[in-house]
Each structure stands twice: as structure tokens, then as C-alpha cells.
Image (cartoon, rainbow, N blue to C red; front, top):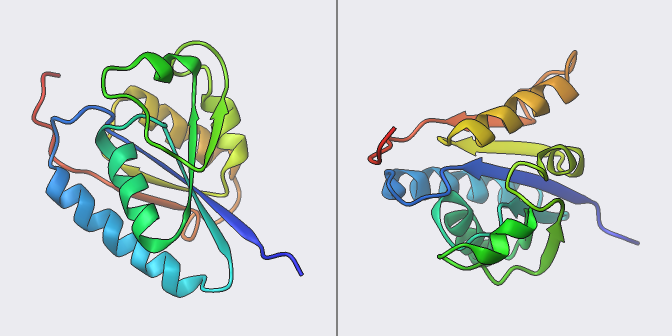
Length: 151
């Protein structure tokens, strides 16, 4: 018997000038709830592949909770200063950041947004559109955290 897989997309700030402590606490609580809620399912944490910002926090916590880490990004991620996180599975779509967004939204089942800039917010809007007419209560979780960088 094959176990069901639930794919959680995690988007948010990809740079480090934000309240990382609060973001970590939020994601830790959410991942703990996910683990409790789905003990008999495979959980994939799907984020932007880079070793910085929200993706890095999400991947570290995914490793802690025994979830499968998936790097979903454009090939541009291979050239970022922070490098990429050593995920279990890599999916590259397009050349530049943003070109992967449509495929990312099609791939995931649920979405968690912690802060974020234009791309995170656009992906959230696309996810809402994809699930138009459905209750988003169990599908979409959004939090804001303080941004310390330039706007």
C-alpha cells in the first residue's frame, strides 16, 4: 500500500532582512501541527531551493520533522550567493525567478506564506485562483512578519 503524499508549498522572504525568530516559531508550530494531523502520510515541503530566508527555515524544520524537502525554482537559483539547500528532490522550471511560479502552484496541494515580496504574493493569488469556489481554510495559511530591509 502506497502512502498518500501531501505537498505543502512554503513561500516568503528569500532574503534575510526579516524577523527570522518569529518566522521560525510560526513554521515550527505549523509543522508540528502538520506532523500530528497527518502521521500516516508523506509530507513534502516545497520551497524555493535557496539556502536563505524562508526556504532555508522551512527546509531546516522539514528535516527536523522528517518531511521530504523539495527545491522548486528556476535555474537562476543555482547562481545565488547563498547557494542551494541540500534538498531530497529538485525541480527546476525556467531560467529566471518567477518563471517557475505556475508549475509550482500546479505541483502543491497546500500553501503557507510567511511575509514575502511580490513573487510570494503573486503565487498566493494564483493559488487562491486555482482553488476558487473551494474553502481555503485547510489549504492556505498566511502570516506577516516584520521586514527590516529596504522597500
